[in-house]
Amino acid sequence: MTTALDLKFALDPATWALALGFDPDPWQAGVLRSGADRVLLNCSRQSGKSTTTALLALHTALYRPGTLALLLSPSLRQSGELFRKVVGFYHRLAEPVPLVAESALRLELANGARVVSLPGTEQTVRGFSGVDLLVIDEASRVADDLYFAVRPMLAVSGGRLLALSTPFGTRGWWWQEWDRGGDEWERVQVTAEDCPRISAAFLEEERQHLGEWWFKQEYMCEFLDSQSAAFTWEMVQSATVEGVELWSL
Image (cartoon, rainbow, N blue to C red; front, side, top):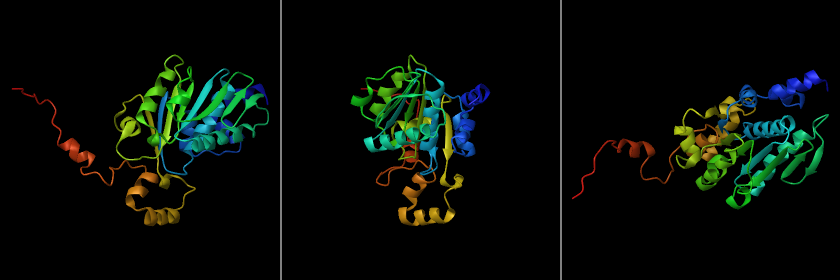
């Protein structure tokens, strides 16, 4: 690889992904090229969000020596699936940074960079610090207390945080950040209709089998109230009045 090409790959992760044989959708290329410190990916099932973040984690490790990319998922199985995508792309490289160590959930390179994937529990993550890239997979299923526990890992390093998921009701930190998290977040929404690899016929079949509530969340990225809720979120909000003084006897 020439120095000029290597520099191009370092500056443009989307072009680098093409060299690995992965042709990103426009939104995926946008995420790979984004410089935002906080990113929320509200994306349909099978849209390619995990693949995109796996590529980003590997690119960070290759081109930022000494960095730590931490991948969190709710379960060990999910952690392993995301990490296998990282390893798979690494082994496609023609001239990768030499490998120092590889295990089921850890990749360590000769430039000092590490990619570590863990199931999301406080016991497994609290020992980490100086994280340069923190990826939270299936974010809507990650508990609030874990989210609050991992954010301080970015305090000193000034690292990036990417959270990816489909919605799972109008509750929890994932919904809160998407709905009212402020301008510091870059928000990317990709429904199944936006994904060229998912056919309209398949979506109609899923709608029939899943029902509207599950279908709209899993494929259309809609945050919906629980089916068992006595009151919708809109009803609660409409009954709330601000600026009322409480009198005590």
